[in-house]
Image (cartoon, rainbow, N blue to C red; front, side, top):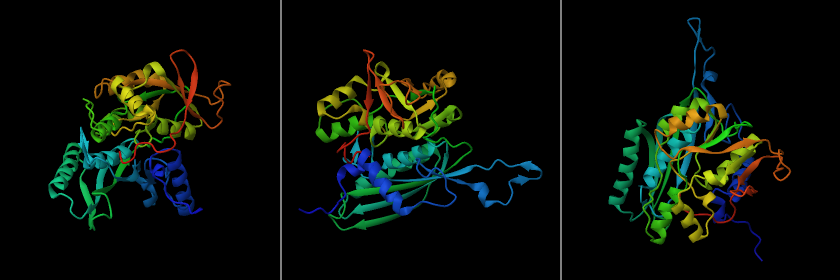
Length: 351
């Protein structure tokens, strides 16, 4: 028997196996230096470290923090209702900066293209990127392009990196006991759009792929933690936020942010709806006293923004005694069940 270890597809799906792979990579890299938040959506650098003094003409200067992030995209199909791989690539990186509280200032674009790829399709993809760049006012400032032999990759791969500036960093470990859990709109619609295209069934749902900069900036001062539920969906993201904050996140079944069609499709395909990714939504925690105000603001962007649960101490109840924190669902009949970090092969090539 060959016991040689290999990389498995599920290691890139955003679930438990992904966490283990990244943890092992981190052990080797042994990240050091003056960078902070290196386990968040973006790494943070204190720009004041570059100055010997932050006092100018007798006044304390407010020096922003630099946020840096990068992401790679392989999507199947490349074009789908509501977007394409180019739109996902730029929105994904812009949103990783936005959920950290940063205002994006520049994006890099790296393309690896398979020999024989349609120039017309490439033009459509680049136009999608340009459209979002123009809408958000964030330029593509640098990049690289390679063409590889046919069969070496599957059509096209895109890597985008981004930098932004933030006066306040929103970390994914900042949830506090007593906070409300909020969502900026219905989740899982990106998964539904791609699955519909892949399996050729009819749906009116389009991908939720969009930039989140304006939405998050409008409420950023109120948020205690924030993240966009991409790979692994809400199950992966809220478990991560809960564990890093050493709290329990409790969702109410009656307020779950899924359309009936999304739930129906998940049941039809036998895929847990909690693992359905989104590309233009965010989940966050906010102090209860501020949640009503935050929802009112967010509903100007999306009427389906709402409170979906709350944050509590891990050992508050005997039936929910995870010392390290976790994600739980309070059902409509009053019972409570644990929502695990997704395991196994989820939905490959979806973002």
